[in-house]
Amino acid sequence: MKNILTGELVRLSALDADEIGRTFARWGRDSEFQRLLNSNVARMASAKNAQTWLEKELDEQPVNLHWFGIRKLDDDMLLGDIDLYVYNWSARDAFVGLGIGEREFWGKGYGTDVMKVILRYGFTEVNLKRVTLIVFEYNPRAIRSYEKAGFRHEGRMRGVLNKEGRRWDMLTMGILREEWMEQNK
Ligand SMILES: CC(C)(COP(=O)(O)OP(=O)(O)OC[C@H]1O[C@@H](n2cnc3c(N)ncnc32)[C@H](O)[C@@H]1OP(=O)(O)O)[C@@H](O)C(=O)NCCC(=O)NCCS
Image 1 (cartoon, helix red, strand yellow):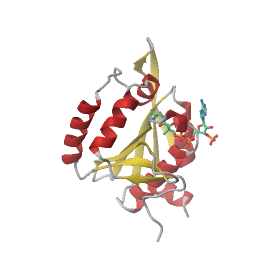
Image 2 (cartoon, rainbow, N blue to C red):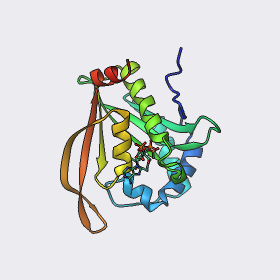
Image 3 (cartoon, rainbow, N blue to C red):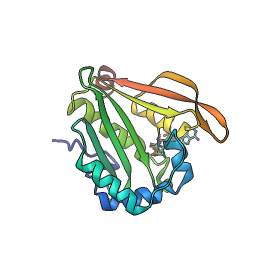
Image 4 (cartoon, helix red, strand yellow):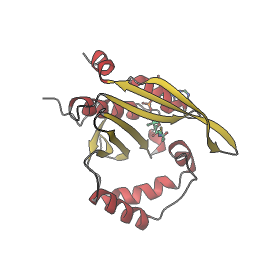
């Protein structure tokens, strides 16, 4: 049977607070990474603070949050993290969010691959009906990657973001279970 946590290039892995805390603190020093990921004001955390926060988050992780590390298959390097948050169980709708913190690995197919893995996990294991995401208009790489993974454009919140002294739109995208099944026959 196919390993549902593994793709062509990456696998989903458990998160270790020490390792990911150190790495989160390093990735957080990259202001471009923060700009692409956070709608809020850029902030930084020390490795110790990130580890303490993560330990607590991982200990108290609710059952409707499926949060993983992203590791390269060839050398097991930690590239980023991805989470699927089932925010409405009766509608079986989940939000997905991901970040590859190692910028030399942007644009090499890892993000699309891990999104395909988490969609398969969400639809075949968690039994979701749809998956939703938000992305900023100034992130064309992410938008293209999500389109490749099968997401459709659904909406646009105009001028909701404040970055670099101007306003930007936030886009919503989604994929329905039937669409995913059609794409993965
Ligand atoms: C967004 C992210 C997950 C995408 O993963 P990735 O591995 O970089 O993306 P992929 O290589 O799988 O696909 C990127 C696609 O965008 C295209 N692309 C790259 N830069 C682009 C640009 N400036 N404009 C348009 N398309 C672009 C690539 O050519 C590729 O499409 P193609 O295969 O048709 O040629 C990753 O870049 C990332 O984590 N970035 C930093 C944080 C972030 O943006 N998180 C997402 C927040 S919503």
